[in-house]
Amino acid sequence: MGTVISLLFFVAARHDEEAWKLPLVCVAVGVVITGVGFCLPPVRLLANCAIFTSPMLPLFCGGVVAGIIRLPKKFRYKGPIRLQLRCLSKGYVVWQDELALDGFDAGAELREIPVYFRVPPPPTAKPTGLYVRWQLVMQRAAVFELPMVDGPVPREVFELPDETVGHHKPAELPSKPTSRHIRFSPLCGGGDGFQVELLPGRNLALGLWGMGFALMFLGLAIMSVLESPSTPWVTMIVLGAGGTVVLTMAASLLLQKTMLIVQGGILGIVNTIGLNRRRKIHAADITDVIAVEQGSSGKKHLYAIYVHRTNAHPIRICGTIYSRNDAEWLVQEMKKSMNQSEPRA
Image (cartoon, rainbow, N blue to C red; front, side):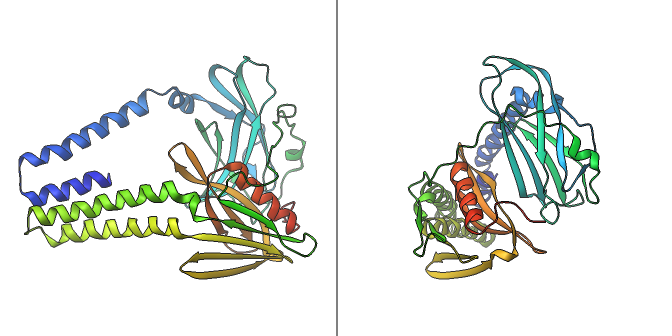
């Protein structure tokens, strides 16, 4: 979309009737590709036809999500089936849990997928409302909107059977980060804390991609001036400002170094871009630490670490971690060091 808008500004500056064909062709190709993408993949059919059933709806904050996902047709089991339960507030994931189901017979044809998640109590979990939604996601293909309410949890909720027992895939978290751009070192003093450095090198590919996109905007601005000295000032401002903003964001990714220091019940966060920006959070104020998927870069998924605080908004302490195992490892180490092995009510 940004490229098409840039082309439209460039064409307007040229005052050339034939030049309008280029952005029109780009728009037509985009419409065709989008239509094919919505119509052809079988996961689209799956998302529209799969059904989630539960013996108890609505769901309760502090309770459980138990039920069955019924598929429109059988599919052959080839590997772990990944389920996600997540809470979104104003479009952002503020809490999520993931379950990998394994242990089915190789090549088995499945029609039903069991579901069982424990829902944290408030304030981590929030009831469904104008800005809050709960979703159950299967294999990134089927998404179910779930109603969540607050209040006393009925006793019957905890008596619902866990049909996923026997199909859990054991968590395989590394003993140290797998990325060479994440450096872990215990602090001196009996192993009561640690320090983690997230180096800028982990953002090299994403930063270079952003800089290339920014240079394209700036190049279009320069070309519009060279091709037609009477180019409207609005065109130059839009292209130049867009390129500058993207270039600044890409440069920050290439320069930002984040350091996390956990010791003595205090979490210290130091972000370095030219100057150090420091922040401290006391463990007594933290109710939970979670890893949240923040987006993707190509085929790689990016994760961020959030801390939830008592009667306050969650804080994003670091991001652009390219491995879920590394993100979960960091969460585990933080909880262990800060005595947060279980979320507090």
